[in-house]
Image (cartoon, rainbow, N blue to C red; front, side, top):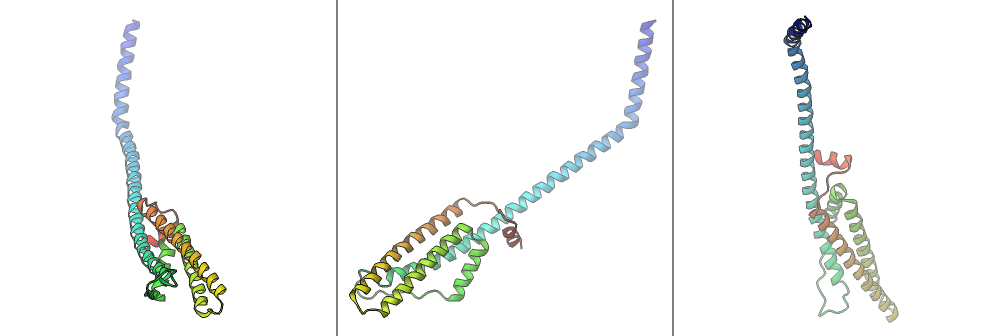
Length: 197
């Protein structure tokens, strides 16, 4: 008799389980799929955000590269002006190029401030300070030709500044090459806001 109770109990349990699955199965499937759909939406949103970030990074890279090319054009013009102003050895008076127009310089520095890295901005400012100091001393040399000692001292200062300008331009070019070879993702919200617009 115990076997009959066990078989009857098993039969009742089977019937109850079938009824349970039949009644509650659709509800369980609905809630399970609802959770899966929410997870899929979250993954899609994350993918969209990632793609948006990649596009913003690409726009920043293009703007930064353009600003750096413009910066290098200005820097090389200034470098040529420094090299040809009061050279130690010259065969005739070398033609010193004119400085680039002020509005172009302001536009270029604005683009560098907006899209350039802090390191490139600092390197560019170092170069600009050196060039300004060079031309202040060159202007003084043009006006002061009273004594040979003053002239010699100013020429030595110009050569020292010419060397500093070469070092500054080399540092700037190196920094720019490194940044453009290994672009970094956008790190600040301010830069991200400027790029997305």
